Image (cartoon, rainbow, N blue to C red):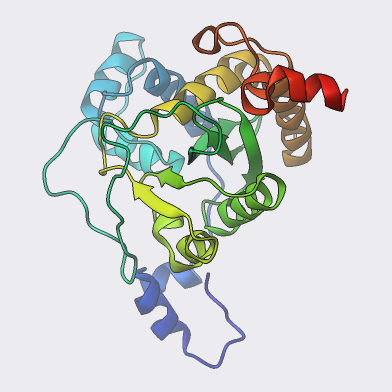
Length: 275
């Protein structure tokens, strides 16, 4: 996000992005092995108890014999990009220069492909380190339309996934995300506005927070990520891509009456003709 070669001063760029200037110059320290192990367990607990905040997660860890403070749990949750999901008043505060769009899905029946797409980001543990996975999902069919892996949570990899989904599958009527800074950034929303897609955003911390993508994360992690220990980003990228092909093409879903996401999205007849 910071362009050191630009004529505009770094201090001014940092101010526009709403970050402290000191963070631009500091060198990131590697995450300790202990913290990586703790983050892996926090990720598992968050999947099982998405309503749990830092205090409850701390207490759950202590019951497992892991002594950790609430503030450290909060720090790790921020690094992982997770937070407790519950309704809180007056929390719709955008990042500087970012616009928050209204939630458009209240009372809407989503029964056909390309009516609503959703997108989210999830923390993915590796053997040494971690990455982030972003995915665009067709809500009606549960099909993963595009995904990207990144070592940072900047908006670029989300924009790439969105652009791929639009290029391959046309455009939805509504695109729903949470209020993460990646999704409220001008660079991201301008792609949707240029494509004439209606933008919908969940209230921050809302119970409904992209629930369909959250179900995808559970499947990806329990059926792929937690069964492996990726040694590199390239290995993680390739293995996750293979799983998502299986997820779309071969994995039946009870919510789809036993159909696969591909069958629900394209239709069995269209897939038979293509074959």
